[in-house]
Amino acid sequence: MKKRLAILLWATDPGAPHLCGTPFFHAAAAGAMDTEVEMYFTSKSVRLLEQGVAERLYPGPARDRTVGEYMAHALEHGAKFYACSQSMLAHDVRSEMLIDGVSGQAGAAAWIGRCMDEDWVTLIY
Figure 1 (cartoon, one colour):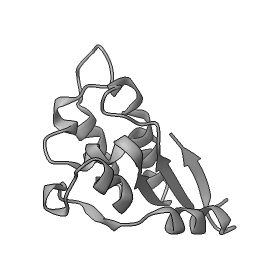
Figure 2 (cartoon, rainbow, N blue to C red):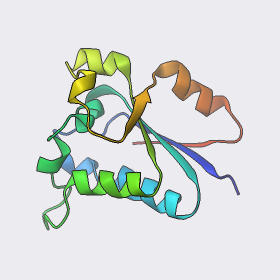
Figure 3 (tube, one colour):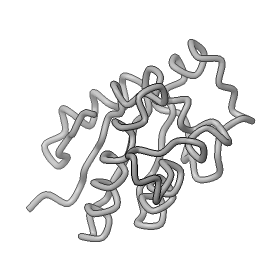
């Protein structure tokens, strides 16, 4: 079984919070299974890394956990978060605005590298 998972957040949009919980739930589950997990935030998903944004979003009508809490759970299980620098520029998200826990910036070349590496499995949300 492969033990490395790269997740691309592409259609995960803060404007559609119902799409924002599952990627982090899956990242936490993979981390709990001793899988190395990297999450790449592109397009509008990069806004989830902005301080205060995810804490105001609820992925479902029960409103029992915020998207920020799902993200924290993924981080607690070892997921690494990477912000796309081009998406940051496009959505006016600056480095000083990012939440604690962001491992750095990584863009298309890093993502494609994971896709091409046979040791990694990839998921796109």
